[in-house]
Figure 1 (cartoon, each protein chain N blue to C red):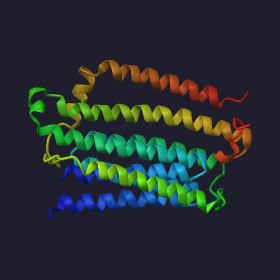
Figure 2: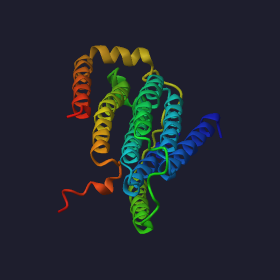
Figure 3: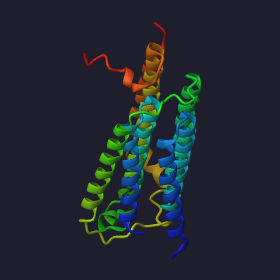
Figure 4: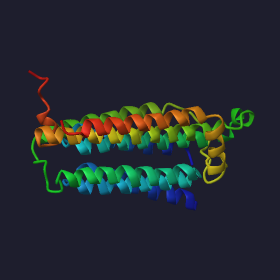
Length: 165
Length: 110
């Protein structure tokens, strides 16, 4: 078993365990912190796949900006105490059962496929910043500019929604 | 590494997100579970792009393998915009009903 396989297994266990902790922890602040751990594990997977640009963007945008925004909203609402009284175990059981059967169906469908091609690990230059930057500013320059308009409209929308009457 | 390992990992993360949306009642945690599902799909897209990087079609087209990663980049861009508007809606909801519990959002029921 190579070092890549060991790293894959460790990162996968870290991602899944942190995700389970995220949906099961009582305090919203702890949930946000566990989700940051999940994002770091996913960034580790990107590094393992030699997608360096996406690993950095994932850390900066998700673990940095978005999760700080979540943490800010949680702190602003003073939700760090336990706000969700534990009740309705039946509903919880039904949710877990239906999610588990969804996983079962998807994995059973996946087992039918027959792909012999392996995933290229830690080689290949398709994920380097140079290649992606070149593609982004030649072939994809119009979507890139349109996404700035999207950000402007999201910003205006957030200000208008959050404004007092 | 086999692609099936990545598919199973992504499916597991996605299902944990689905279970979180179904089980939790806090609007912020539900929103975080949606982010988790988005990230699971992103991971799978990157794994598929690395799987097809050596295929014959990738030899013919130079940007074949990096197109999927640019796709993931735009998913992240849209997710960032979506989070800002969604959190503004949650703050507005907290200001109106003084709670983020989605059980109180039942005015359309009657």
